[in-house]
Amino acid sequence: MFYDDQQYRQIGQGSTSSTFTSAVLDAVKGEATAVDFYGRLAEAAPNEQMKADILRIRQDEHDHFQLFSWLYVQLTGNQPVYQITPVQFQSFSEGLRIAYRDELEDYETYRNLYLTQSDPTVRNILLRAFSDEIKHAIRFGFMTTNLA
Image (cartoon, rainbow, N blue to C red; front, side, top):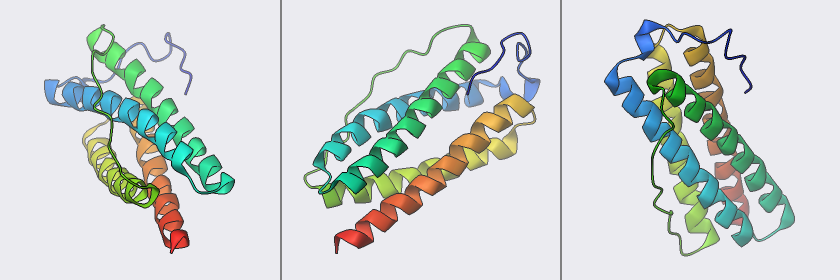
């Protein structure tokens, strides 16, 4: 997660389009939203094991937030400006279903962005993110089946 700014000072030309920059800002917002959501979902967990699993996922999302924020600054020279809309859920099982769907969507988004990029630093960030997102979806799916 930590990059030597001198080594990665230049992000490749393939990643500087306004569409990609907008997608990175969306990722920053999405990861910040997930950090908030998973903190509240962990508090609603019915047991300590599920709470611990969700908090581990939350830490990954925080790491993604930092990586995408760093990337946004590299692309624009500015700190990302965003506002989250808290995810609402009425029960733990509903929260798990929402989280599962969100993780699958993020996996697809980050994977598709990865395929459009040639810069190795950008690709590494996206690879980390989409690999984690599918792992999270699997964990949330497993937790859902264990509630039944």
